[in-house]
Image (cartoon, rainbow, N blue to C red; front, side, top):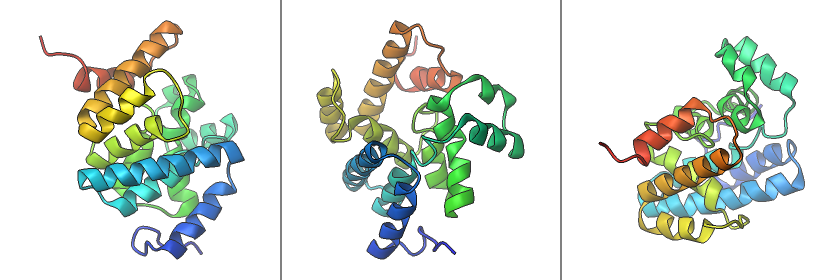
Length: 198
């Protein structure tokens, strides 16, 4: 039986969670997860957010990243989620659907943590401080290396909302450049955090 990671957070509990997470992903993905945890815990400290929740959400944000399409479709069906989700891809599923797998398989039912996992790739018009921490930490973790990441890191140190806006704008520009479909919630995030009110 899994321990209640949220209520009984300790180094021992963290190590148990780390082992569960590690067993469900490649070494490369696991290294990324640890990097996100490091960034998230610092952002949490800097912004008055629960460091424990930031650690747990960061460790589990990509828990479902390497699952099969069949796994995601099974959850979409069993949980009665919007069937339109099946028209998207792992980039969306591992957050939106992955939160259900985190709850089901790891016994984590803290709504703050699950919501942060749900929106960590798309953002949302309404984001809690923990949502912002995970969203930004995933973008700026130490292993990331792409044009603009250092600016994102600098913004994150100064102002979390500014970092959310910068990341959202950069992500949208990247998707437009690729002529990729854009998930509706990503547009909502842009309209809330980036677009200037007319």
